[in-house]
Length: 196
Image (cartoon, rainbow, N blue to C red; front, side, top):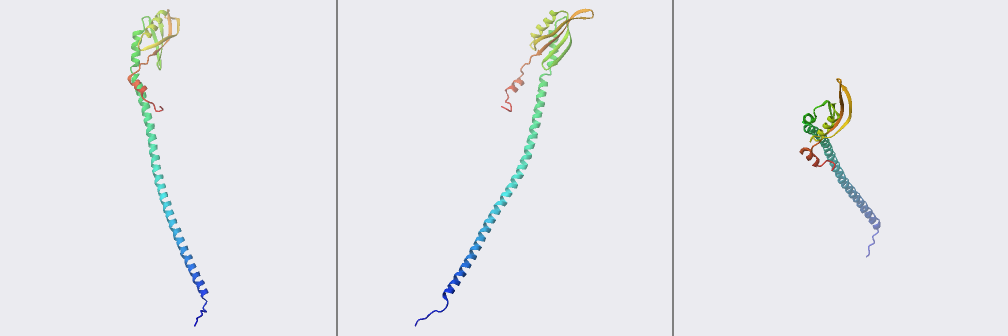
């Protein structure tokens, strides 16, 4: 005999499929939420790591900025010391120049010529004085030009004057100190400069 199933089997299948859909949807939602949480945690960890790196780099940059400031100060001090050293070297090289100049003048000024004033501006020496004649001034110019220490002597002015009821020739003359190259100067000329 045949049995007929009068139970609503389609309704039960639909109910089972609906339940399976809800369970699957809930599982998918949970899986999606878990994946989102995992991605969010990884991204948050990366952001935190990058922020920590940025903080570390900022600290190191501030330390380097301070060190750069110290280096700039040291460079300025070095430049100031080098400038002082150059001044001292220039003074050291010119220390005996005045003594040498007066020795040369004493040896080169002929008799009959009297110097009243000697002034120096750089390597230019200005001589003022009196001579008994123009020939004595000319003789002094020749003698100064023959000096290994002096060069380019020239008369600025010469004029006849009365001094103590005697006729004399007042003169003003320029002469230049010949710059000799010292070993220190030669080394400085050969040394490379900062710019090139």
